[in-house]
Image 1: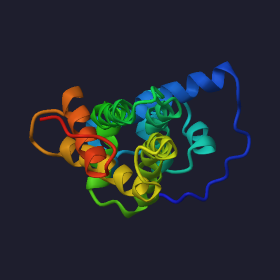
Image 2: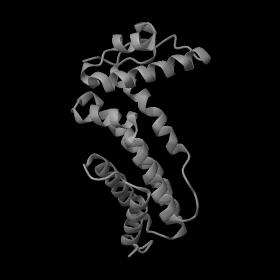
Image 3: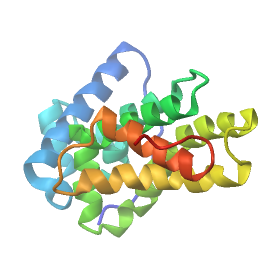
Length: 199
């Protein structure tokens, strides 16, 4: 197992750095799809990205760090969440964002890697889960401040929404649609007293 104790001094910034990051992300994703997390090597990623392995170790001290940089753009989407004043619409929109993130090649790569029970990935999985829950809490927190739902229900509804989407995405059923997200949001908020589920 690779350690995370390599030194990361001398990391460069600027256009060349952004190009390296982009190349390494693409190469890491390609290797994850080709051989999986266990068989993926830093040498293979370096060759595919066209960079020296020391360039990778300078910025990404482990395979887990490489996987983290692959999924980071997905998580950055959660920094811009909807605010329509309608709790159901906003909750459904965030749930759809999570659904799209999990369905993307990057999200699938993380799911497959985490599903292989690599204990070194647990911290990353926890971070991704928390980053995914954060926009749900923000949307629901606004609803609570408006009096649409109780403050005490915010965390529970956020977890139910997140894990509902995540579980659905792992199931062999049809993909979660926009209508499914809206209905799930109606049900969750209706059960909390904030909306009435559609008939």
